[in-house]
Amino acid sequence: MQSQFVISIVLASLGAILFAAKAIVVKFSYQYGATADVVLTLRMVFSLPIFWFAVWWSQRNTSLQPLIRKDVVKVFGIGLLGYFLSAYLDFLGLQYISAGLERVILYLTPAIVLVLSKFLLKKEIDRQQYWAMAVAYLGIVLVFIHDIELNGSGAVALGSTLVFLAAVVYSFYLIFAGELVGRVGSIRLVALASASATIAACLQSLVLDFNQLFIQTPNVYQLAWINALFCTFIPMVCIMMAVQRIGSSMTAQAGTIGPVGTAFLGWYFLDEKISTLQLVGIAVVLIGIAILLSIGNKSNISSAPTE
Image 1 (tube, rainbow, N blue to C red):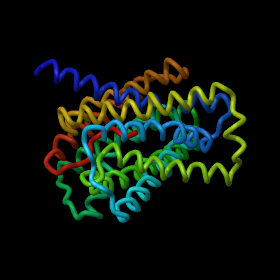
Image 2 (cartoon, helix red, strand yellow):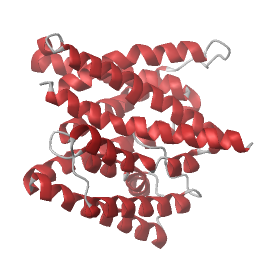
Image 3 (cartoon, helix red, strand yellow):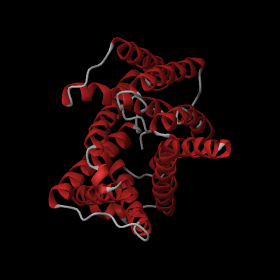
Image 4 (spheres, rainbow, N blue to C red):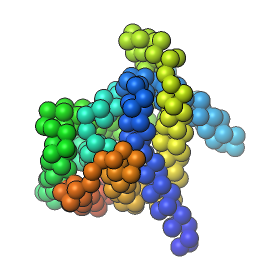
């Protein structure tokens, strides 16, 4: 029993680190001249067949109920939110801020989900939850100041705004996906959502410059495969397996390694500086979100690490 728990924690931590490594891969792609829309389109095109293979594999022994048109429309709609618009805003933001700040901002998703749930689902927020969110946002300010010292206020403000909007859009995706996952199935939902995002990304590239998808250096295509397999599909499977074994709240607690891991990955691979202020800010964010999740465990706050 103890070994199963340890394996589940390892899976959750590995998933969080691999999700976090996405920012490193994207920044490497930028160094080879790729743009945000190209990186996103290649990621979606390369990851889509992997997800549909997973759907086929999962249906070998279990049969999923047929989908009605209404569910398909909803899943395609939330796919545009969670896997196209959110990812595109995130990739744009990574052009201006460090990988560490990007991951810390995205880690605010549970707090954003809580606020949106108040207005959309009429769920109450108690005083402890407000204090927990205040602590988390204080941590963001500290990491934000660290980035300003390195990159200047204008670029950091723009990049942070874009990534924060990505987190808000992804929070909408989580809220709406929660209503569908029981009927559609988690893997099939992700595959269908990815399909709609892939179509949108290809159409965007067609409008901007479709030829850019075919004239990138080999390094960009290699990074796209790494992004699709190791930073998208595998971490998603790890997170789902961990949630099934130990629940979403415990999985999220293990996922706190994500922001810390991103800071050190950025330092190792991208020469991004790590300061005491940044580490303190990350710690404050993690404390705030940990408190929020421990309170919100009773109120079903979505707590899986963001993609």
